[in-house]
Length: 292
Image 1: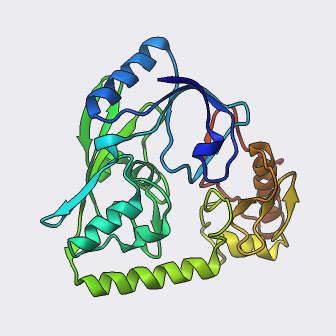
Image 2: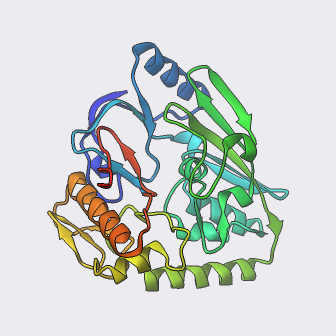
């Protein structure tokens, strides 16, 4: 384990302070050992995958941050089942599924995260999500590891019942046979849509807010509020898509929080809608409550 590891380089937005402790377990036994140690020391635990959908406090995180590696970041596909470690990038998992001519995981091409993060937030895009293909996930904590079904995981729209201290060590997905060329065509179409609509060449943490139960999406709502290009410090709401925050120039996490707060204020003021952040907050960081 290492001490005082800067987390900004492990997040896609590029902000955040250091982790008090940082480890990269490569097996389930190593993972359980780290979790038991943190529990004995009374330390909070968090996991960083590819660093998307994550906003780390500028002061850092006072506990143990894990980044799964080795067999916990590997993936393979055969006989209709895609299996991946919690640290396996979804892009790698999609590649394995495509090579095995298994379809149903194409939506993952639009999610720059890992298996663990995908299960944690029930990630989804373009009509598909993790809950729709997940068979089971192996979840570890300080007491051991066990397999949980989607129902036991409490998967809902962009969330689950998992909490810090619980780590998705592995997951299995049930897919359907599909010709290779069909998979490639679907992925290409999805990637083209994403590139056209989203700031894929900028440093962001992905979607800021969950889409509300409203005729307008969160992005469209914030665009109508005039927030495209709105800036706070070194962060700005993307001029291309208003549900993204970009690191425009040396942004801090506090700058992103200020933008989130302003966006929520304007959405409620103009539409009477309370937007809920999709991004996960790590450390002493919170979105200010809306004033009555």
